[in-house]
Amino acid sequence: MNISAIQKCINPDCGSEFDCGQAMFKCPDCGDLLDILYDWDKTTVPAKMSDFANRWATRNNPLDFSGVWRFRELLNFCEDKHRVTVGEGQTLLQQNDELAAFLGMDKGSLHLEYEGMNPSGSFKDNGMTAAFSHAVMVGAKSCACASTGNTSAAVALYAHACGMKCTVFIGSGRIAFGKLSQAMDYGANTIQIQGDFDDCMKQVQEVCTRLNIYLLNSLNPFRLEGQKTIMYRIIEGLGWEVPDWIIVPGGNLGNSSAFGKAFFELKELGLIDRIPRLAIINAAGADTLSYLVNERGLKWNGGNVNMKEVQALYADFTARHFSPHTIASAIEISRPVNLKKCLRSIDICDGIVRKVTDEQICDAKALVGRYGMGCEPASAATIAGLRDMLADGTIGKSERVACVLTGHLLKDPDKTVSYHKNSEGEFSNPPVESANDIEEIIKHIV
Image (tube, rainbow, N blue to C red; front, top):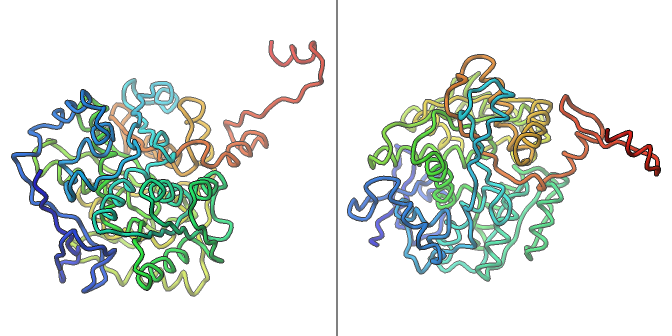
């Protein structure tokens, strides 16, 4: 397979290009974000998406088993010998007619893309398998990340698989124990910063620059290449057809950025005939994207983003000592690093941004549990957002919708137990206390 990819600055006034043999997480010339661009070899890219199904017959090959690398012609930035896999991407697109009926949708309209089935329990593994492959390619020996939880778990897992030293930065009291336990169990050096995720993100960039450590946050453009495959698997799960809507939680905005890029490339290659719409759901306590897009009118504008609006908001955050707060800790981020790429995805996908309250998230999470397989709080933002968009007519009841459930139910079980045990919401299912007597027990059953 011919390798023909470059790293390119997304700033139209810069546009600097670099080969993929270099490790960098931002443009060294202007400091903006980098993209991975391909000189597509039409002789090796399949003629149609369904051709990728042939690899189900050769799943004894670890790369064909991987739900990321079986699409490797569409993220062809390294040779097979460098590709790392721990079996990521064995996810399920569940057609959920029970939840659809509860929401007033037609049968066959609602699908849940359950990324909690990944080895570390979240969507992050899609990005890590790609980023660690690049790290191996460039000879990295040590890596680091800032994390609200899922990133640290995935980085620690893949670092262990690669024999690489790993350091994760977490904010003080800002991580679910289910996620923290993974990073510690996989052997990561965990540093708890007295601050929030944004503080950790600032520090990890400085540390990686000074110590020449490989950065694994979604500033890393190779992370997003792996996350594109979530969309490929949704198309695969729909019989190689494109849905009408993709709904995804919005935190650091890596997923939404990757999804828009994925659809743009597939359309460019002629592998899909249309691009679905994208809805990005913020938590109300961390609603930077919603505010900038819906209240300040921020747009991609061909790459000429009005960064004065962004800088003014961030300056206000600093002046007020603002720190985001939401029960959905995975998206508790106020300065999303992929903001500009996300704006591009909104442009590509005719996208919209919504915000939902913690109460809506908790209720939606209980619905996913009752009618689906359960998910972490951030994942449930998708269903909360869907409920709002169905109510106001933005999404029709017969439109085919794929909601990305980003993480496993047991990533943050404390929130689940509290919601039910303390009867905190409309769909709470508290345990019943009973005397240690057979007759009394039977009364609670019949």
